[in-house]
Image (tube, rainbow, N blue to C red):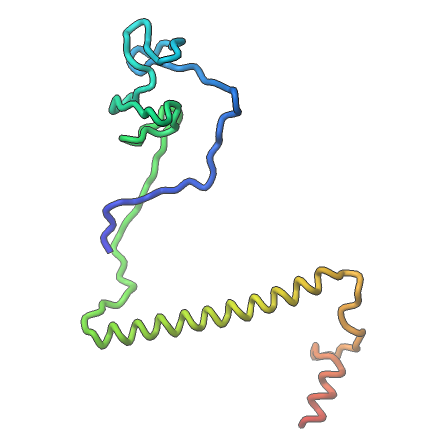
Length: 160
């Protein structure tokens, strides 16, 4: 697989408090801009434009990232990707190999689905037990030295 584009999604984002406004700064001369339209009185540049590509995002003037080039005037992002070829997978060269491997994948998916169903049923049973903590879970049964209850040991001996 050759990757040509990577998409990075952030799980959370810090939003400034409502009504809290930051001082607008001119991207050219770095002076504070008080004009509501964002025009710098010193150099005449628009303070809402990106410092790198000079694009103005009219939909979100106070956007965190530039919608054109991705520059952020508030912080800096750095990613380090270490990429190397992986030789773990088998190459599929024939149609027969493809069918065999698709069958293996389907078998693994079915197995995972069965295990998921079993875990879901165990979860319901555990939640039922935890929902009523005052009720006795099991009648007190003596435990044999091997870890099985005496009743299950007797049942095992009766079937033998």
